[in-house]
Length: 125
Image 1: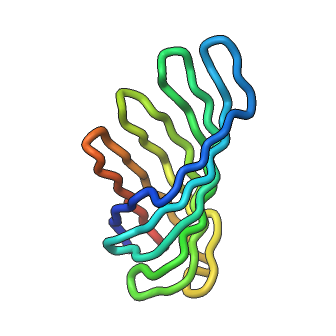
Image 2: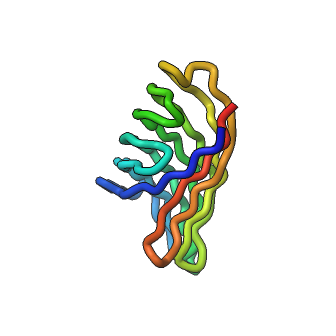
Image 3: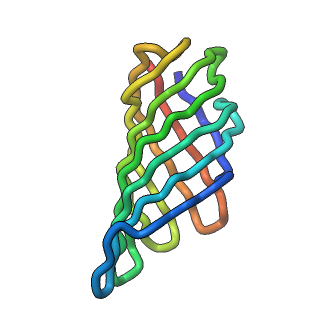
């Protein structure tokens, strides 16, 4: 099953963990709302490191609750990505699920580009 959705950031609370000359390590708690093939809400925890040139690397775990492809429940997605050139991209891996998504597996990608378009594509097995 291929799912395509857009999302809006409903909340972003970021704080530094450690800072050094030209860089920092931060943690962000994020709330999102989804529309498209996925309808629902998500909570996400990121750990990010910023480089002196403004780029960043991040890892995150996201729990998305709602409906997708006629199924209802929750998915847990692992994100590993980078922010560079005003766009964030991440590889996604389904690492858990509940409800109709129990036992789900899959992968995908997330893109947040400078135009404000934020999309998520996931292939579920």
